[in-house]
Image (cartoon, rainbow, N blue to C red; front, side, top):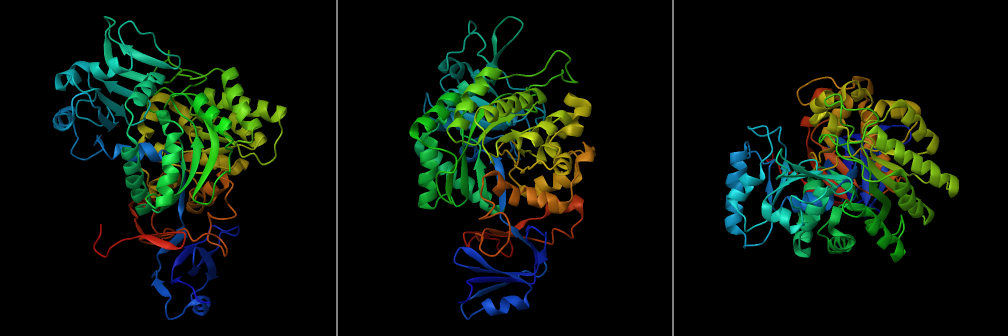
Length: 540
């Protein structure tokens, strides 16, 4: 029996239990059948075997992103994206909006994503009045890059019932000016209500899935933990499964069950359906039940135990009280779910840990692998509780690169325990890296770069005590992601018998200067033994 594909003369970073570095790998059907030096792979090479000479380049397990938003990333690609290079100012954005309005039927939504007030020339948000000047016949919504805040015109606000007389919803805010008039800006649960109203058709969602999958594959991502599609309900999971079955989505999906607009209803519907964590196959599997407990790190709206350094009167926003968190996630745990929550601030993390401690006392379960999504400000006392409770942390290392300058401003010395990978390693707390795209770029190489350098985009040091070595960063983007979804026996490392999900980089990852890690590129992505992406010779 010969292999279908053999990789030789490479730097094979196996991420096995010994952290061994090999030279060659043989693949047959959808599995790895040989790992060793180049000579040892000769026995797997037949006349029809494709032999790929890596010439010293790195071959790694396929990257596993343990928290991103597949649906939102994909549908964002259908509209105006403020992260496109030509959108440098509000005037550039308004020009694009006017074009889109002219192309859109009256009454239909016009959506903008990826807005960052710090990245435009004017350094401010648009106003409702400016958007009304573009159109009052189309509902217009501009979604901030964090996906926790949006700006809308009058038509969009009216569509969700927001008016001057509206009260702030629990866990949210409808911003008003000094005269009590709506500014158009809404935050947290108010934003989520608006986001839910501006939903997409099934056809648009499926188109977005394909665009997202193609983008992820080119970045070497072979598995994703989809962290929810917010307000679009369980139907999105059915559409996702359909797209995987058709081959439009090529990445493996671990589907986290939750919704920002009504997580309780979403989880309830899945429990009533009889679904539970682990249901599915190697392509699509039900993951944990998830709540959102607080806001975003850049809003800043995350819930903290002491006020922000930038605002002594602000400690962020909480979505639920302790009783509500215990009730919903407690029932999910009892039914057999892995449980998790978006918890960025130390106050929110503490509440989630209280919940996990409570549910484990009532209904003990070994190897539950309950998670914390983000765990932004993970203070030492909270880390100790994570270890005691056996919790898996899902930090976002690239946040410190992209958002770090604002973290230093808003949280001061607390940056030393933000996304604290080194502390997790030393304490034996399992953790898996994630991008949270579309909040920031999906690139695993940027995440690895941020974890080993701990510098902001402006080259400021940020929590340098949390730097980890490159091997540990690679593991957090591969094996650890598989562990967080109970799949480490099938993927996450290059070992005989595991799924042939592999990625080839443009250079040796172990030899490149640490400050240049983010500049590497992906040359080949294999999923299930098939090459799904191969960079063309002249492709940039």
